[in-house]
Image (cartoon, rainbow, N blue to C red):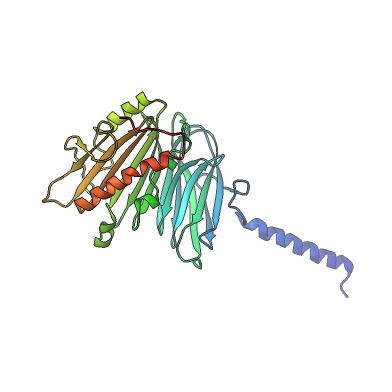
Length: 318
């Protein structure tokens, strides 16, 4: 018979071992809520797994005033979503993921606690979705509010559902410009015949919320005349003068331009700039099949007002 003292010692040791085992898990489940989010330090990474499309993990990070934060997520399989949230649930930046590495950026954020949200999206329900996530500080400056008078600026931008099939969101950045806080979403399709039929190979959408209609008009005028710095040799853009985009609001408030708008060259770059009172949108696309791309550009433009309808009513200036 084992002495009682020995039994107590064995139970105590087993309990201690169990506690050590739990402590070894850096982010025990469930960890999908703000309250149960796990701490993640800058320049460190965490590994996790999403066993179902409905699963989600959150990590909390502390940001000093004016820091620019870059969050990187690597996934070998499956489709996932990466989002940077402010305390209270404000969506700062977001990107939808295919296998590979994606990033979101929040420039010059106000000091506070933020959250990294990782979730499974679509795909085989029986497929595990392992990932590695980390963040780092890549710059600093004067802090700018993460949201706007209309809440999340990201929620005003186009979504993967708007852009359509065979498109992958490859960029999600909350930027700071002379206009203030600007959100930028980038979507891309493969340069294949099947993908080209679904729409342009490159779609960039920028949106800014200003504090007045007069300020928005200044932004509108500026965005309507400069060549996009994002356009490079593989995505050429040249303004051929203002070309009214028919059927979208008043011509004086919705203008576009295109690159190589001729019948002999199938490559097209379209840019459209629209203003809804205090909100200004820019849509830039590059791809093939001019007629199809133009129709898709106009369809995307008509989707802007759907996102504006989620907040206080706005009208398109005429």
